Image (tube, rainbow, N blue to C red; front, side):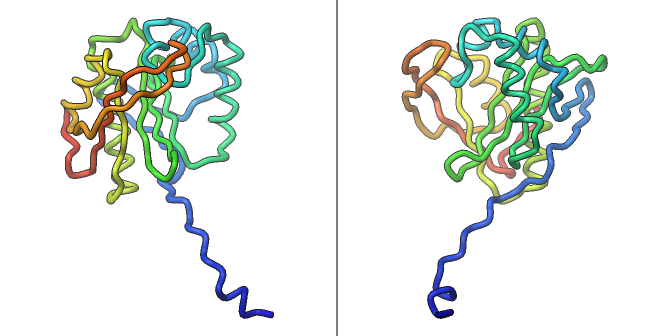
Length: 193
């Protein structure tokens, strides 16, 4: 009776980087999201210039969409990180997310358009990726950008990401397939912006 129990394959444990941290940089604070971020998230992702560069954001994007997403992020049910990017006044201006999908860790990020061109995205992504690699040093972190997002590709190259290929992925906001440049980085490749 017990012989078949000993022969069962073991279920692999989900790799866990630990709880979503608070990270301080020279100009920013990255912190776990709160339900009170809903208005800021809805405002940012309601801007088509932002949502069109993200694969899973619907258009139009409403406050209820933000609340639905924030409820999942703040529930603490998964080991993924979704860090709110804030400035000194604790106003939500963007997001850096690191999540486990199909057995691989993936990075995504966005920034409110009014904060573009100030180096905030580079600073936030570098800080989040650096902290992630402190907790998960042997991990490969995957990311990518839509082929028409030159600024994001420049950011990733500056931080040490390497291009690994190109694919077509469905973009909800664009309602179609979009060319996606796939990238990856390891702890040893990460460079300061």
